[in-house]
Length: 281
Image (cartoon, rainbow, N blue to C red; front, side):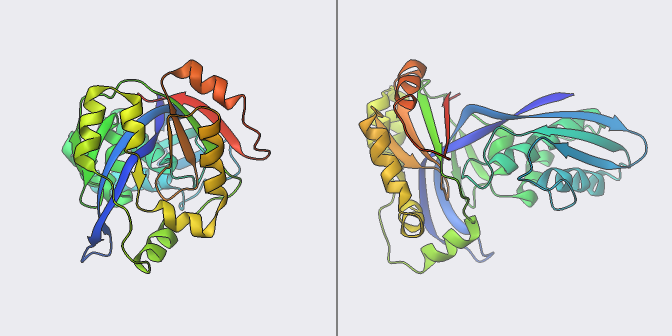
């Protein structure tokens, strides 16, 4: 079975406070983009879970979130089947694009079919939440308002397609470290979710771009000021708006369409950076 695991960007990321369970209460507008990893799942009767990948940036053993997703399914259902999973990575690692979460979501969906488990969508979402806060969104995809720790999802009408240029510096960041640093700062700007919902409904990329806001961006910028340079360069290349996605360090620029995004990407000069052109879905 072959599956695509799509990356995401945050059009907004607001933080309401710290929860009793240690997570942060968030309110985010999340958007799937066309950039994706590819997973091939082949069921096996020997009970072994085997993962191989074309990327040297990820582990392939029990510490891999795909492996953990398979084990979680077996523990939950009592199934003892095995699987061979080939993971072709296109989404940068530790980039704020939910690459690992998307791979885990695809694994849950795929193994539910390959192993003939018959789990409901609700059960898959509950299991996904145990793997990571972004996994439930990745199971759903599209344009979504997320609340709670990211597991309370409100699907929205699909946004008008926009061109997207992703710029990933040659380093990753720790989401946990960024949130910890955020807690040590005084309150900062928060997104206007209501206004962004109206802008998305209007389909106006300029209105959407004017309301891009990520409460974590100022934290990651302190550690990695390169993010400011990326944003300025994207704007100079013609982006309608720019924002860091998630906890970073990837920065995206929004464009009216794919052609404009491709043209802008051709103007960028970021040696050793990953530059990816895609669209919203």
